[in-house]
Image (cartoon, rainbow, N blue to C red):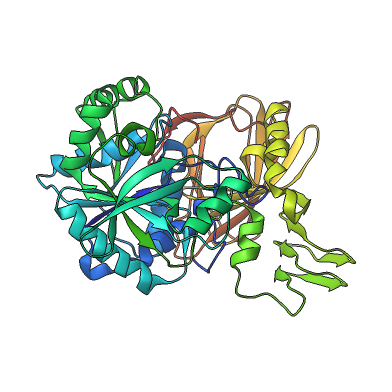
Length: 472
């Protein structure tokens, strides 16, 4: 069985924690591991081949770093030049598997789901594997425990083998009355968005029911570029691919769709309310508290503090989430309207839509700790052995003060070693580079000054991470 992890989402339903540059699959929300890491670590390792990941170009280094930190060995990371939904993404994975001379059973997983009962999950995987090896396209239907209107549903048909069912019907998200009928019937399950099938079987069905997607993905995989563990597909060919989900493109049309019931504490963690509902750490008043908070007369609420003290008094059913640069306060039953706030942030081109105050890069991170009209102050952390690109700026000068560790700093034709409590000045227009030659983290304060301080005022001349063109 070969896991295929779809990690390309840029979801905004968990703003302000989740941002376009740091979506929820890269956050630690349900354990001390990120959701991407948990997706692999919950699998039965004795039955798994090395997983394959699919993510956006701009998230590539974050994905690779999180896998490295968790000691997860993997096949490769396929980079989507543009988002085209799940049917094309899975096609790229299936084609990649066949290119390696194999025809494995693919286990398709989202990188941002919660599954709390691992034993029950493994049991469902065993049942699905039997069906997949018989040429079936298997989906996992979550046993519903309420009349939920936020999920699509699967209607079960006649039984197939032990524990499986033919899919009688896929249905869209229902209204409450319809969802209540589904729950009472005992024949409907939540659509989990997880699948299992052989690579060749999926491609056969895709070519029959969505030949345009099959053709575009095949063309995109014929001209790939390998970059470390990343695989870049042909961007022009993939851009021509229709945007469609596996449900619409294949599962609703194939005669071989089957379902295995799943009762394993599944949740798609689609809102702050979902995190409150699934938490096992509620206090006696039904509150979930993460971080530094003082509550007085508060019930059934979710409080998440990243940096500062939060004090909440006399409120019920609220969500309060604090990050370094934003605070969300919402009624727990209205968190779906966060999308309206995010849309406004995007329309106004505010940085809080895309980035956190702390931004992660392949070499480390930077935290914008202060700024004004013509200056900006950042705390920069560079991992041991890593180096920023050789670059220059047209509109700003920089002053670097080393706080801990040591730095090799190139300014023009000179390279010097700068250690703790020492500083160096980078004039406007001067080519420069920064490297951590040591064994410990390099931390420095950068003071920028000039007429324009945007991140796009970077001209790269060389870069070990292949970012000369993309600015990331």
